[in-house]
Amino acid sequence: MKLVFYAASPYVRKVMACAIARGIDSQIEKIKLGITDPVLASMNPLAKVPALVTGDGMALYDSPVICEYLDSVGTAPGLFPPAGPVRWTAIRRAALADGILDAAQPRRRELALPQDEGRTTWIAKQQGKVARALDALEAEADSLNDLSTYGEITIACALGYLDFRFANEPWRPGHPKLTAWYERVVNLPAMAGTMPVG
Image (cartoon, rainbow, N blue to C red):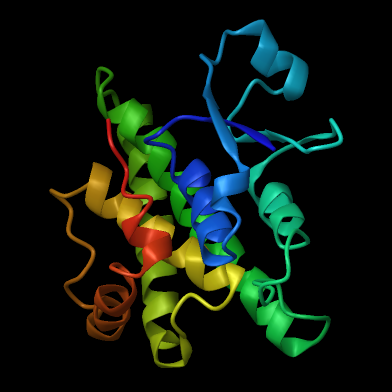
């Protein structure tokens, strides 16, 4: 398998964390391509990372699809639970954590631009999304396990991204249970082996 990656991408981190959790990371060759590289566009018409080419040449994108595909490779216990309430919980949690990333990533770019009323209003909306998501995760932090599902891995990657890119806006105050959970899982192989750089 070949994975187009960018080391600082939390979505790429999520893919690699899932691969490590399932013990198949050694089967993935990482390729770094710029977003303007035509090879990336040939793999993913959206020209976004991550993009994965499977062993039989099928191109997959984006991170939720790639992670579910990786869950079908090998014999380790799945990160996507079988159909039923536990699965709905796992993928809902992943969607909430992806929402944190979807709000935080573009906000970081906008902060570097001249700040007018429209931009500051938009930035505040994104901050509100992240704050509400963190509160929701705090409310169910007692039921989080040690990265046994795709949802938990996505949450850990989202919290790690906030630490990485928004260290000046600490998320831990007001979220003691979520903090305790994160401190418990951040040094597990899936997280420790995918710390962002750049």
